[in-house]
Length: 517
Image 1: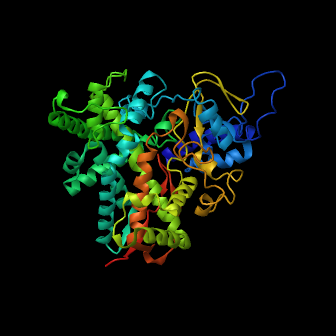
Image 2: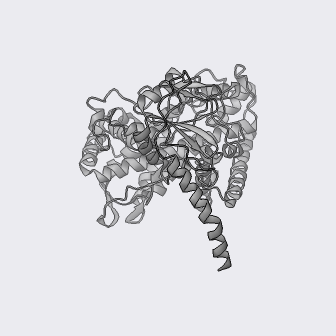
Image 3: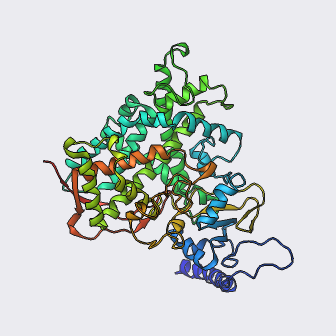
């Protein structure tokens, strides 16, 4: 009883003060200054002491921020704990940040979580500078160029066939989410580590599942990275998180050390190996081999890729290639289950194109126009990372006439942009046909700012060409071989669960009916 009384004595005054500040700041921002001062973006008031506007974000920040933008505009100023942040929620504002003023907004805010998990030497979260420029160039030129991406075609086709096999012999009702994550994880593992190392890691089924859980923890912890320095409480930061970060880092570091050591032991003398050109010449090398080659042969890199740098870049590949890929596949299947006419139309296209061949290959993908439209529409409605990794201008900058102070966090709400009725007719509806008609020219590669699931400009994701066929191969294979319905014939729960990527809250419990015995 004494403890409860003490809690009330502490909490009631705090609540009264917070409510006072909340009501005091509830009105909209004041009118633009008339005395020549810089015009700051509108804001929903001053916020609460210490918290700022964090209490307005809720459990699904991309949705809450869209609602706030509807009231305060597509360029909106918030205070997230002690950190000022500008939220961008329109295609025009996103284009200014990622194209017109791309260099001004090319840096990232410092993230203690990302630095600890990624050695402070990765590409995705690194601040703009010489190391980032050279490391990104290595990723674009050597790891993710067109020829290198095509070299992993066999991996994607084999893993899609393995996914079909696992679904066929699973129980009558299966949560597809776990199988899809395993598919995406194995594709990236084989590309990053090579077949021999990947098989060694996943040979033991129990250990393989444990390793996938470690990678899952890694991605989940990275999901707190953009927010941790704003407010540890809002980010889910508890004393146990420190331990999770340490355990996850140690587990992944041990795996990567072993893989890199194994690659070094198996390598031929430098004189016996092919040297890499701008697009690579050995189509059978995995990412670790390529990075070890670059370290020895790429004199223009200007950066030394020691073991730490190689581990950081490989982990970037896992973060970008596993969670976001599996999320896109999940949501595409969920939307098709919810829209059976669209599913039937897509299955008819796939089955007519593949015919009696019995197996989808990447040769079929370019012929599947409706599949491409379904993927675009899924990425519009469900961008895997709805709030793109924040940017941070080192100097004062401007967005649509609003002044943005140096070191302000700039958050692009890709989800709100994809749901903006000013850009998209019937914006809340799943309509793949739009990408066969008036929006046929729109793509997700960073040139059309109404659809930016992978970002754009200098900070756009360099792995789009690797991710797209991985998503399409899984979808085409699953829809060619099976007819689908929900377990128990109930409606699918389309609610969201927040993280680095936004997943289905209740998973994807489905029944697969084989088309072929």
